[in-house]
Length: 455
View (cartoon, rainbow, N blue to C red):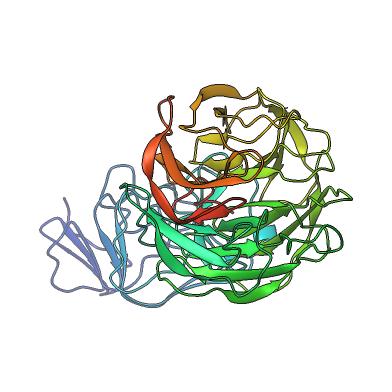
């Protein structure tokens, strides 16, 4: 190559076919001391665009100086296909968009922040796996492709707490460890009396009792709500009140964050539904209406839906359903195989179970019904309780459902029996142990029931 230079200043050097611009010691094919500016040149504008045939760097590029990416350009690093390591400050100005696509592996040595907002600001159709922080509930949540669910999980033990009862023990709480068998132990006392045929629900950590009545026949519905910590024994504490005096003979269910109370009544009957946020303290608010006005219903939930069924005066077999995260009226899900009331209701994340109760002819029932909560349809036969009984209490983990106490023979013979079934397989209940007292009209909750993991 000729080394004759005509009309070029000393800034240009050609030595041994190596070109230097602003460089007197040329060691590369092109050695440039300073910046290179190129306009309307294909393949230019990226990091080390001369390094590869197509003008893209496929190796790690390190940005150590402060970089401003504004909305007037795509930035000087748009053509990188390899790894970018940022050790300096990067500023993205308002109105601009930076899109990085998929990241296979991300390692953070200090901290990072996920998107955040309240419940109403959720994207309704995000990509499955999308994660955000919910400011209303103080929890991380993710989208599973169909629903938003919480990822905040505490240590669970399978503890179940059974509360209240009539005629004795209306303020008594017992607890059991559901993965094992054995007799119940004393947990504490409810701060408010009148909790029988009441609503009981809870989160992984907190149990909630609300409603019920004090034993009279009229004008005695209880509006008090109290709570207790499931992991530690002790007395309950005031939480708030239900808004209406409609919660004698009521029922309740919950997700991880929200509890629903289905009104009952007597001698008048009501169809209202009220809700609370379990992690806070305060009074219940209106949620919507039930399909029917009736009392002595039973209830359970999946992580997204709440269910209730049974009740008089109609002895309706109808099963109704609501979406827990959004307020609104209940719709019909299906029907029970037996029209009756005073069932025990509980669920894991898949199956909901109604057990026991009695029919319009005051016949005590042994049958256990179940539904698959993700679909709609009528209940199916599961098996039988060890003893037919009215007003049993029910609670469940992800594997077992237990049924405690109840009225085992008319007119007033109560029992302290606890029996259980394995939810995944149909079959008859077997003996678990005994409660501390013989009573009826109890309700219970666990730290691992079917409603947990949702809103």
